[in-house]
Image (cartoon, rainbow, N blue to C red; front, side):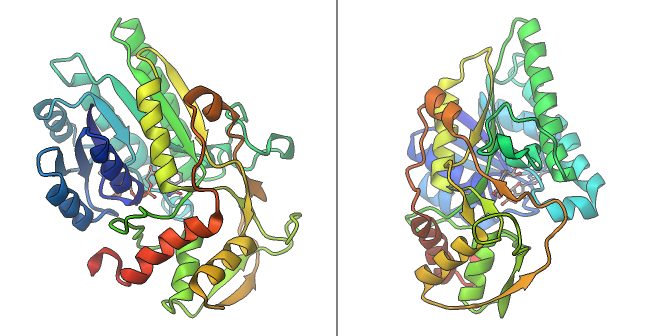
Length: 346
Ligand SMILES: NC(=O)c1ccc[n+]([C@@H]2O[C@H](COP(=O)([O-])OP(=O)(O)OC[C@H]3O[C@@H](n4cnc5c(N)ncnc54)[C@H](O)[C@@H]3O)[C@@H](O)[C@H]2O)c1
C-alpha cells in the first residue's frame, strides 16, 4: 500500500515507518519535528531510497498535506502525530486542543480533498487508554466497551478526535464513498526496535521505563515513585506495557483486516499489568545497576491499575503480543539508550 505516516519522525511513528517499509509498502512520513527527529528519517531514506520520503510539514497545513497525498498517490493514513503528555496538557490545554484537534481536522480536510475529491481509503488513528480515564474496578482488565471518561485534556483530545473520525467516516458512507477507519487505543508503549537502529528519544522524557534507564545510566541521580500506598500487592500503580514492535504489528493487521465501510476500535496492550516496582526491578536486573529510588506522594488523577482485556483484538485481528517478558522489553530500550547516550543527537 501507499501510506502517509503522520508523526513519522517520532518514537512510535518512526518504528511504524521501518516496519511498513520492511513489509514492502511505500511510505511518506510527515512531521513538523517539534518532538520528532530528522536523524531516523535520514537513516530510513538511506536504507529505502525508492520507497521512503520525509516531508517536513505541520498536520494543520492542509495544502502541504494534500500535495503530499496527491503527488505520492497515498491512499492510507496512519495518524501518530500529536502532543502526547498528560501533565503538559493540563498546563496548556488550548495548545493540546489546537494541535491534536484543530490540526487534526486540517489533516482530515486534506484526506477528504485528496485524489480529485475521492479522498483516502484507510485511516488508522493512534488513540489511547487515556480515553478511559480511571475505569471502575469491575472494568479492569479494560475492554473496548468500558465507558470513556478521560481525566486530562490529552485524553479528551484523543476521545474527541475519535468522535470526529467516526462522524467523518459516517459522512463518507452517506456519500457512497466509504472509508476503513480503525482506532487503536494503546496502553503504555515501550522498548525499541531490536535491530538497534531506532529508539525512544523524548524531550522531556516522562515515560517510566526510559526515566528508570536514565537513572541506571547515571543521567539522573535518582528517580521517584509517585504513590506507594495504592491498594495493589506492592502499593504502586499497575500498567500494561506493550512492545513498540508488537504495537506496529497491530497497525499492520488493522490495515489489512478492517474493510472499507467498517469503523473499528481496538485496545492494544498485552493484557498483563506490571507494578511500578516490578518495572524498576526489571530495569535494575537488565542494567545491573541498583539506582536510588525515592517514595513520593501520589499524583492527582493517576489510575490505580490500568491494563488491557485483549479479547477483541485477539479474536478479530488475530493479534497477540509476541514480546511479553518485561525484561526483554526493557532490554531493547536499555540497549539503545546505552549505545546512544545523547539519543539521536549522537
Ligand atoms: N508513547 C505511548 O506510550 C503512547 C500511548 C498511547 C498513545 N500514544 C499516541 O501515539 C502517538 C505517537 O506517540 P509517541 O510516543 O511516538 O510520541 P512522539 O512525540 O515521539 O511522536 C509524535 C510525533 O508527532 C509530531 N507532531 C506533533 N504534532 C504535530 C503536528 N501538528 N504536525 C506535524 N507533526 C506533529 C511530533 O513532532 C512527533 O514527532 C501519539 O498520537 C500518542 O498520543 C502514545
